[in-house]
Amino acid sequence: MSFRLLASLFRSRGYATMGGILVGTALLGFLFFHAPRAGADTTNGSVHFKPVPVVHVYPNGLRLIYVDNPYSPIVTFQIWYKVGSINEIRGKTGISHFTEHMMFTGTPRYPHGYLDREINAIGGQSNAFTDYDFTAYFENTAPKYIDLAMKIESDRMTHLSLTPEQLARERKIVLEERRNDYDDPTQKLVEQVYAKAFRVHPYHNPVIGWEPDIKRISRSDLKRYYTSHYMPNNATIIVVGPVDGPELIAAIGNQFGSIPRGPSPAPVTVREPVQKGLRFTVIHKPAMLPVTMLAFHAPNFKSPDSYALTVLSTLLSGGRSSILYRQMVYQNPIAVDAEGDYEAMTKGPSLFYFYAQGLPKVSPPLLRHRLEGIIEGLKSNKVSKDALERAKKQVISGFLMGQESTFGLGMLLGEMATIGVPLDYLDTYVDRIKSVSLDDIQRVVRTYLTKSNETVGYLYPTGTPKKPSISRPNRIVR
Image 1 (cartoon, rainbow, N blue to C red):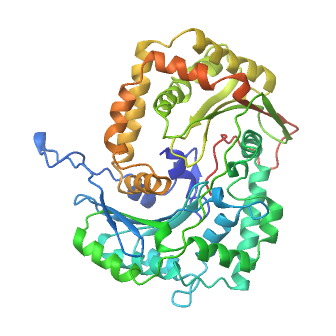
Image 2: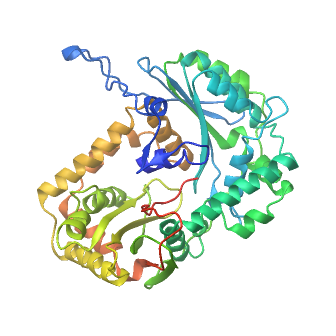
Image 3: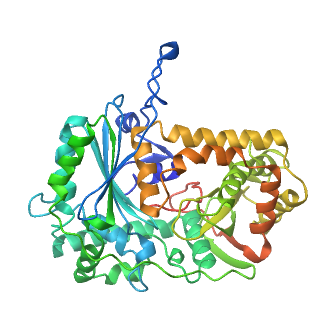
């Protein structure tokens, strides 16, 4: 899981982000507490802790995955629902995100404001986020307060009020978020590239939805969507922290066990046709800089090629020593930034993308010419063995460091459980990254980074925006 997801999920409920880094001392303490790793070895005076996920399934279909980490000062309680914008139908886009907003408006037992007030009173954090493939809610607290998280989440799984007054209030908030996205030129470019690359699959639609759909989503629509997806057999609870396994299983059973299972939601069966030609989208908006974005259809975690694609993404755009940054920013500079991403853990097909933010007078076609030249160079010339090894070490380091945070490990387990990644992924990932060869890199470049599989997005600045900023094109998580 990328750090981008950790950062962006805090936007909707009042946390600030700056350059992809979460702002706030208390929050940083929660997210980046480094739990020791690997066993109970005390060699050289240090204790190491190896996370061992335990799975328990309740009679009503609710799944619990927990990791007992006795060294963590906090516990993260997360509930992940298998519902996101991938489950939405035409004319109702954005309803997953809208439902997430409504989940904070209260129940008869815990009215609006109760959750924030009680969690703040104990020095914890509570938030939620919606992605293409899932919606998740979490509370980070001291271990002795985990019962509060259980009570809140079990109650709003079935008793959401959905009052007309709160619906009207949240619709205004969601529409404001939608307009902010539209006003951000780089995010508008990302939205249009996804819409152009995916013509049939629900990934065509932004997670927040299209504005006309948000305006017409009704209370009955929300209630039907809520009752169809918020049920124990469509949810996974993740708990990481100092917990007693049997006691935790019993406590969650007491809170959630009486909630009846519901009908299984219909699976998403839409398949995106194979792209057979170059596609373009062009945006003209007030912006600080021109941007060119290139995106290519790529397989998800189920494909063995996902490991080589992950390493390739790091080679191309893994920081300031990466190929794109060196050639676009340092050597014969025509850009102020050049980065990209590839998200392997998706339910549906993925996109492998990268972009360049040009110097003020550089044209988007010139940026594209340089970016495509780099790709063509990789097809005919292998990267150096040293560069490959550095990239693999960078990928492995990021994967392992993500598990050293109590919250980060919970996020990784939740994402895996919700999209169907087996738990042995944790044990095999490092070896599979290590096994990526120079031939593998060249093969996936030639296979996936082709003209017939390419979608190009241009952003032409038309003037200075009202709120000048230089934001990076990222896949948006609400």
